[in-house]
View (cartoon, rainbow, N blue to C red):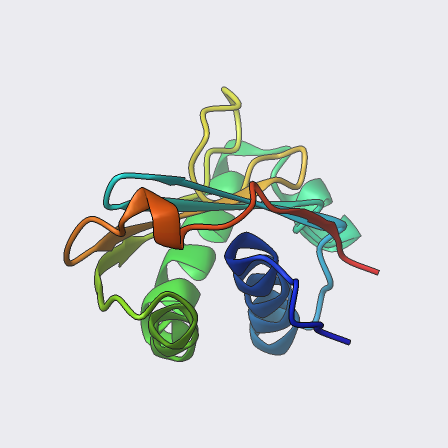
Length: 139
């Protein structure tokens, strides 16, 4: 249950966890939300299902997984963008997500099951309006 002292970061983390569950059927382990100027980064840890982790072990499987998650995010991210707008009061100008299956580069879904979502806001969100650093367990 959200209380009045729930931080903006926690609200976005909850929205991102719920979004991921709706779009993939898999609930990530946790979410971390960080804001720097106009860049909002949402990291979902443990976001790959066991089958996806197995698929990512081969180059062909990793490529299929990358394309699947790229297309899925592109076709479903509007609802999360609207939730972020409602929480922050700032329009999301751009949103991207990618899977990196071999190097551990922070992008969409890593072989470790980490998902990073980066949202470029239409303008800076004033520091005084941003609350919390927002790590939230997914259970």
